[in-house]
Amino acid sequence: MDDGGALNPAKGIFIVILVVIVLVVLVFHLLLLKFFRIWLQAKLSRADVTFAELIGMWLRKVDVREIVLCRITAVQAGLDVTGLDFLESHYHTGGNVAKVVRALILAKRENIDLSWKDATTIDLAGRDVLAEVQAAIETRVESDVNGNDEQKLYFGDVGEAVSDLNPRGQAKFGNMVVDVVAEGLFISKKSEVEIIESHGERIVVRAVGI
Image (cartoon, rainbow, N blue to C red; front, side, top):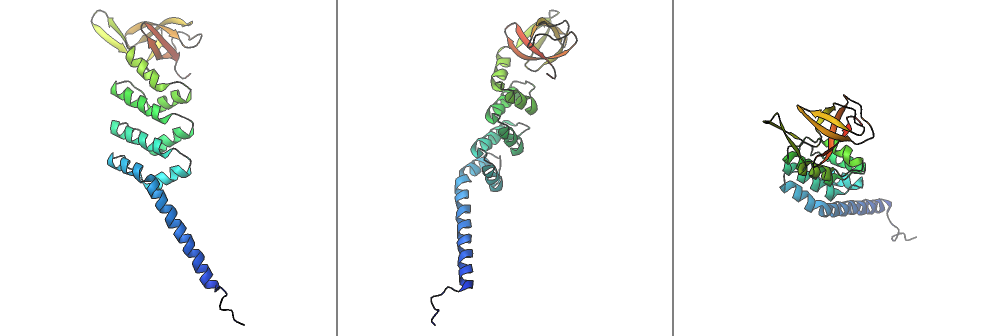
């Protein structure tokens, strides 16, 4: 019986392996093409990322372009927090990574004390962290203490309530006592408070840790 047309088992296995290798190589090259531009942009910006990191983010369903561009922006601005893990973690929690990075850059430029933790907390609370930093810059409070010692108050400054805030009262920041309004209904005297908003002479505070 002529079995010349029958497929040799070893030959069949070889063909399967060859097809798999070709598919793997093809997928690899497609991924290289997919991420090459953003990889090169990061490389030229000295915010290096590896192809493994890019593919890993893609597999974890992360917006690769957004995260890498945020990293590039953060590196160029000299921010302390530029690691992909920080950026990706905030992305996965539903945060606006780009807005947080822009807020941190603006805060750094204007010498406003704002940490990554505080910025992301504000963002995840549903507040516009960038708008709050911009408001703090635009409405900085200046006062002349004792006629010659000028002090400025900034977003995030921490002081102490020198009266019950119900919701209005007074708080002391450094050697400066100002009228403030509590974010909630009541803050007791001697509680630590921080500035979260200011519009002209209106300064809004909240109890620290709340």
